[in-house]
Structures are given as structure tokens and as C-alpha cells.
Length: 420
Image (cartoon, rainbow, N blue to C red; front, side):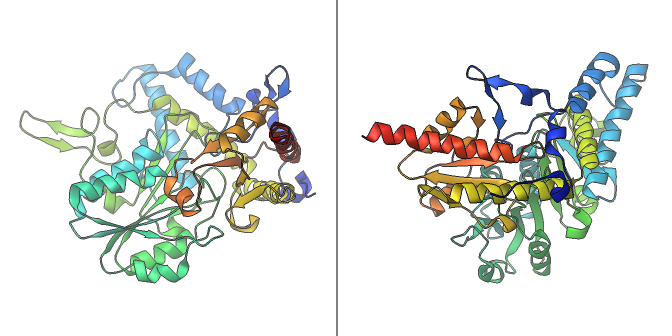
């Protein structure tokens, strides 16, 4: 069985686990928690929790309004968080970083603002079959409003994009390409830079859903030359309720604001308004102040550990998980080989529903996700209604993978007894 070690991956998960209070929890009468639901949301280290508590106890006030001491303290923390995100992404300026409530809100902002302003009936939007509903439904809604046409890149049987179809589907009618950087079901890593190159050659802009990539691997929006990119804080050790939309300055300046209200204006009269400069133009109302500060603390933590080391560590765990699960005849693994995917292993068990698998694993303390994972078209592509997903992060260990294997043995024993 493949195991991971600090020497082989550059990351000591056993030591890092001490930073996460919740991982000491026991469930169901004393079973140690084995948390393998990181693709849904991650846990938070003490550093992030402390940053949130410190702000509420010593620094909290509304931002961009007051001139008193607390307001000035909070202003600095909030804008420092924006700068931290800018550096994390490799963006050219903090004005290209818009805080939202999450990936979903960021994608909807682009669909409503850029899509409504610049796409017309008959224009085409290219997606993939493996998109999360948050990168499908906003474009369905745009199609209903504007009459744009949606196209979809198909997948191979092992969960990779059908590259032979890319040049056929990206045409002079393609105006926007919206793709995930890493599938939340298959773990498939998308060659973003190549997608961007081909889309730009056809005159299309590109939006990248990085919700499953930002927590796990290095990204560089300048190197990718991506036009828009979205991600969420809660999947990368940060709080819920905070997300980021990166957009190239020229595009953000050309788009009309989507939300209206306080903060996003320069001047308001009874019959008109003038929007504020970037990024306030897209941040109407009181922004997610403390979540943004918590996100900055999470990024600082990830920078110290190193995203490259995190990616190597997760790939080692995925290789181990593939070995463990492949030894079970009843298991059907979904997606590509470990070298083509992130820290996600999804599977089914023959004649056992995914929800039953997850419930029985939970009795032994192993937390996984079951269902269609907000990716119904993807499951339909593989003839499934649901799957089980184990997803790994920097604090998971080889022992966690072994616990998953033991749990599946218990699941199979349970159903064999029932079938007798």
C-alpha cells in the first residue's frame, strides 16, 4: 500500500492536524473523526479562528464609511485582505479583486453583468459536461433572457475533456467559455492555459470556476491570461460567506454594475446615479468584512504550508485511495488516473446506494459526501444518479485512507448479511 510521509511530499499532515481543533472531535459514541468531505467545505485552523475572533473583539466596524478609530482599523484589515488575494492570484492590481459571497455569486455577477451587456441572441457560450450547477444554471438563465446558445465539451469515459471536440466547438460564434479548473466530482484537472489560448484565438473571453482548484494548487491568472476567475473561501480554510471574483481591469470597467445600493456609487440623484470606481462598483452594501479578513488569514496559512506541497500530498493520498478501492471488486472508480486529478476520489458500490454507503461510513466516523454533488449532467453522462465522494486536504493522512477502506469493508459485510 502506498503511504505518504513528510519526506516524500514536503508536508507533515500529522503536525498540521494540531492546528485544527475540530479534528480532535469524536462522533457516534467515541469514533475518531475522519473528515473526507473537503470538496464540500474545509475545516479551519486556529489561526483563522483567532483572526475572526480578534476582529470582532478589538477591531470591528463598518468599512469605507467611518473616520473613527475602529473604522480605520477595519478599513486597513479589509483592504489588506484584498491585497493578500491579489498576491495569491498573481493579479496586477487589487482593483481587479471583487469580494462576493462565494463562487456562485461571482459567476452570477459575470453572467448578469457581462452576459447581459455584451452577449446577444445567437451568440454561443461553451461549457463542459462536468460543470457544477453554479457554472451551468447562470448560463441557462442567460440563455432564457438573451437567447444565447449553450454548447458543451463532452468527456471521455475516464473523465477527461474530449480535446478532438474543442476546435469544433470553439468557433467565431463563441463569445464566452466557462470551465472548471478542477471537477468537484471527478477531480479532473483542466488545462486552463490551453483552453484560454484557443478561446482567445476565436475572440472569446474565459471564466474559470476555481472553487476546487484555489485550495489545492498554485494558480496564476496572469500566466493563464484568464479573463475572469471565481473561488470561495470556505473550501480553502477560510470562513463561509466570502468569495472572490477576479476580472481583468478593462473588462470590469466596461461592465455595468449588477447590484445597486450603498458603497457602489460615486453620486446619486433622484433620476440617475454614477457608479464608483473599481472594485467598489461591484460591492454594494456592507461587504463581508470579517469573512474577508478570515480569508486573508487562511491564505497566509496556505502560503506558509505551500500549495505545491499540498498538491503533492493530496496526489499521494489519491494514489493510495485508488489502490485501496481498486482492491474491492464491488467498487467502480470514477474519473481519470491519480496523475490527472486533484484530491478527489468518487466511486460507486455495486447494488448499494451512495447514501447508504455514506451513512454507514459515518457510523465509523468517516465523513464523505453522497449524491450528485450539484453535477447532475455529469452523473447522467456516466449513467448514475449518485456517487460517493472522498475528498482530501492538507490535514488528511494515510491512516484516513485506511479508515475509508476499513469502513467500506464494514459496509459490504453489512449488506452481505442483509442479503442472506
